[in-house]
Image (tube, rainbow, N blue to C red; front, side):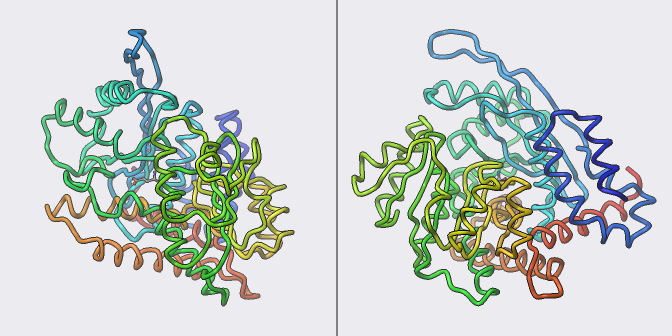
Amino acid sequence: MKTKDIMARLQAKYPGENEYLQAVQEVLESIEDVYNQHPEFERAKIVERMVEPDRIFTFRVTWVDDRGEVQTNTGYRVQFNSAIGPYKGGLRFHRAVSPSMLKFLGFEQTFKNALTTLPMGGAKGGSDFDPAGKSNEEIMRFCQAFMLELWNCIGPDQDIPAGDVGVGGREIGYLYGMYKKLARQYNTGVLTGKGATWGGSILRPEATGFGALYFTHYLLEKAGKDLKNCKIAVSGFGNVAWGAATKATELGAKVVTISGPDGYIYDPAGISGEKIDYMLELRASGNDVCQPYAEEFPEATFYEGKKPWEVKCDIALPCATQNELNGDDADMLMANKTLCVAEVSNMGCTAEAVDKFIAAGQLFAPGKAVNAGGVATSGLEMTQNAIRLSWSAKEVDEKLHYIMHSIHEQCVKYGKTDDGYVNYVKGANIAGFMKVANAMMAQGIV
Ligand code: GLU
């Protein structure tokens, strides 16, 4: 297998699907050597099969807004790979959602889910619906219209959607309510991220951020460093950034930034306590701006149109969206002697930034390892739904710890280089790939 040849074919077939092509290229470059040591993979065309989703559902979603006007959006579900379990992955509601974006996310999800140690295949879905500025009723009507098309494609043993950007507990509730009405199936396991009193797992809302901090702890520990007293730059102010800020503060670190599409907030006093709660209020306002933080807490400063990577920090945690940290940002972070960069968003760093980090021996870990605690806890939610029991916060947290530790170990196993540097990108990609490839081999040419 030659990455160059496969990429040339994919570029010709899917011109302009840049995020998808970027995600595939990164994985293929990581696995090329290992792959070529397995002629049986080549004979079974594992890579050619793995880079194509099993299927994509595309549908029109029509709903009526508060002014009585008819609105039309496009909905998707990309069922990427089911080699190690039923399709599993979130739904993203964002104006920029496209087939390319969901294919990249579904592809990443396949490897991420393989790393969690749980039996889950990879999927992603969503819509170009823009939740910004929508009323609660509009959100509900949209979710109901979306489920009207999706319900037939999903099920607890088939495909289990969850939240992602623009989809949180409220949206999962509306989607679940409509699913039951249409499918007349009352199995809670069809969606994850549900409320704790109706089938949800305790700690699921916090899990992506908590898991990311556990992973960062292992990352630093392996390098002989400690999280305590570290200054952390976080981007975003959604559910993931909130969970990360909560756990970072609990572990004795200080989070000094959050950001939105409008710019970033620098709060030298640290974003903790009521300020973390305020992030939830900001999110709930639905306006997708972080500037009001600086009005609420005058000791903080708002930097319009800028990204938080210019702030001198010990740890950088991109928690917002794909390609939010580019080559120039990487240079800036390294010039400021940042100890580690842990990608919490999916593909948060551009390929150029990742290449720079690896070439410089910078401690860096990719999203599919760092943020896997979210989907892993979704997997734990599915288990609780299947056995019709709820675990305590302690039980879930212990399992999450164990999973993040195991992901870190897998990355080290496959990513360790001769000079002792751990290439976590390579480690995560090879570990995930080997698990999915071996399962595909065992299940024949299908
Ligand atoms: N959207 C999250 C992710 O990117 C969670 C998916 C899930 O819980 O299924 O992994």
